[in-house]
Length: 284
Length: 292
Image 1 (cartoon, rainbow over the protein chains, first blue to last red):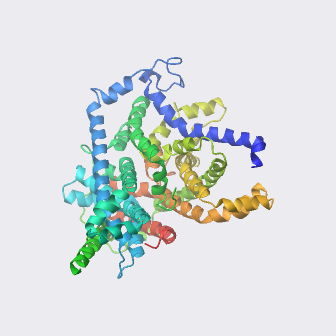
Image 2 (cartoon, rainbow over the protein chains, first blue to last red):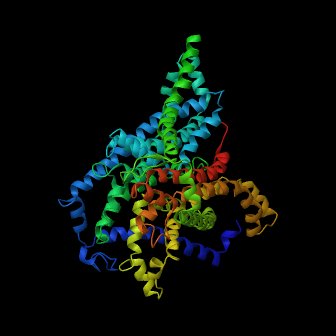
């Protein structure tokens, strides 16, 4: 521990760098909060201290949540919550089953790792490549601008990752517990339902939250598959761009509504977020 | 006993089948349909009928579509710059925070924010910060004597503005990924190096770097594939402009498909794009491929 004795220039450099980087990272969020507290007359000012430099106003929030546009915003939030939770639930159901099968059993004609790799390769597709056929399929099925269309799209988008992560979570469970249960007369299905599933609960919750975040943030499928009734928060932000330009106060308030839920969820599950984003390549 | 075997078999196949079927129906089938459309001329906005044109769309892409080549050039350039900068900044941060334990969890959570926020929200927040007339960043830069307005109107400079936002958004990804990798490094090696009197640089060069290299390659590939699909930032900040200077491949295909409704051609473009992405993905998949 020789290094600790010298709080040298190096240490100072490190702290300056870290603080600068933290400031840089947080500034856009901070500015969004400040701008959402400004009245339209002050929206372009550089004042940043509420009460001291400018009088905080709830105008933006009144417009966004109140009579003028409240219905639209609430609908957006409702759609976002509904689509994200529903699609993640489906992903989890399909993903846990497939993950368990690939983690516990051996396939012969196709090797397990070939199946798993093929599944993951679905994650690599550029969404725009699928968006056009999706649009045409949903149009044929008369499902454009409906919740099921977007849920179905988000399930395809998240399922490969969920299966891939669930394989890992199930493999981390010691197989012996399930084997002991089988010897005690449990059926394989009971072993899965009563033992493997509860034991991997942290992983299951993490996958659910991850998929929820990805679905909440997803933009391209929603913007191509919906035009009025089923817009989610990200699309509503984009809709705030008018020919007159941007109303800063309004876009700030809407962005905050869209940004806060996934950011809080990510903070709660920070360990798993990186694991999910790196497709399981990094484990903490 | 044979009944038990039957049931086990049911679980083995029955559990995997729904997920696989879903992917077949919802991912593979649309792609195949898109492939068949890519051999047709189908301008849905006009009354002209769908016609089979063979490979003509692909000839147009490769030999007669400067806008495609422009978007490809922009996207490749963009990916190269952002991934390089993010890797180095992330490495630096991870190296620093690996040593200084204090407040590490605080930083770890703070740096998640940009990644967890919806990219389109990020785009609009930055669009406001960078607004040429009223953006706070532009004003602050002006006070420092730097004229930012040119950056937002000059087609040669706007790509760098988008890159800055991308670097803001995704450096934390490299950082947190590498930080986790740093923590997994065996302590004994460092003790040995210290006993042998290795300098800080030598320790990094001969121990940390080689051990970290595999994960660095994986993270770089992951990030590159993701950056290649760049869409939201372009949509939200520049709309591809000025001119077509910041038009990414995804955005170009989106324009052709959903604004010009030239569906056949958009599908051909999609397949060229898909080919490129799958080619790069192949390297990543080989690395991630594991014994399951």
